[in-house]
Length: 166
Image 1: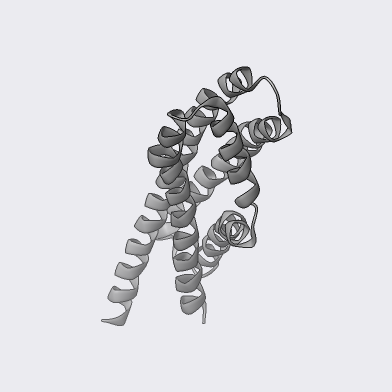
Image 2: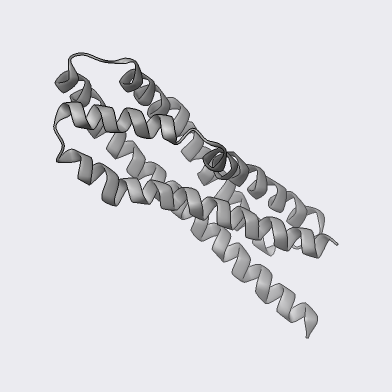
């Protein structure tokens, strides 16, 4: 039973983390470079609409689900004595929590400022864009590193499972 639970939570944690890393990556390589070419009004309006659209159940499921699943799979690996993956799972959790801290300390306040503003668009954009892009890159890197740690855990888990079934 624990073997199935460990495998399922590790898979789900890896999937959810990958989805969030991919979202941040898409913003880093496509969305923000594309918006950089837009005029101030278009930039602000687009970001306001993105900020509104992203607050949905699918995003919440992956964004909040990932750290819960990482914590659950870490606990299951600790409890069942399969500790080889623990350093990688712990690192993934720390990296994901770092991304959450950045999101709530930097990105959300910037988004809230942008959402509340309707005037002085050039100054608003100047305050928002470079800082948001820079910190989104950090979020991209931390979630990608968390994903890499989880993949290492998956590979370690599969090699332990294979060795145990021989």
